[in-house]
Length: 254
Image: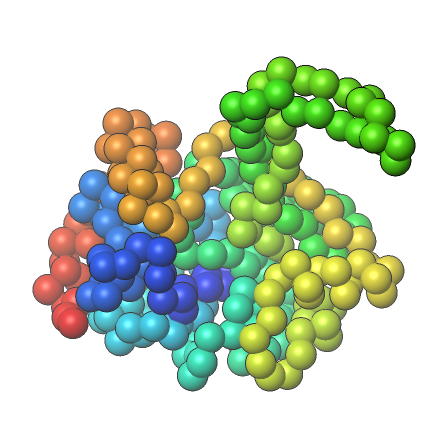
């Protein structure tokens, strides 16, 4: 089982912290978020992970100390310029089988093995992991028709929707929709695939999902991970992760 982790972004919303440390190495209770993700993938049965790097790539590579880490085979792909969330796939060798592609800035307790299994049983060219999100509106919401008549009036409603979780399982056939160069994002790639008749399915994450894109989100994710680490890592995996992280800490430099 193979995965590609997109870890090349600059993390502008997390500045000034990311001026010295790339976002994938932002610690949650002392553990880089990328190391947590890799440990989860290993526990789900993944054996080979490609890290797509850009900003401060040398620091991320140094945090692993080589091409094997905690039993995982690693390789690295380097963006010379920002390529978005789909463009980096054009730099990789063609997929030989289904491949999980995900962002490197997520704290989630998604069951990666179940996501993979559901995708493999489907006829889909791609499966998107989705997170249920709710937004409480602080005002009354009014809807009008074309003649400005009020058709609906709801007081402080809660809006619910499914958001892309930045986690996908892709079939090799999807790569033909990736342009050979330039910046391209995953929604545009999947839209092109759908327009061509490819089946795209959704997988709703029943548990927790958070990104760490802002200081507030990072603080919340850190507090959540610290309060209930077993939700994200089993005891043995957590012990191995802390040991691996401690062994590699000295290798990370600015």
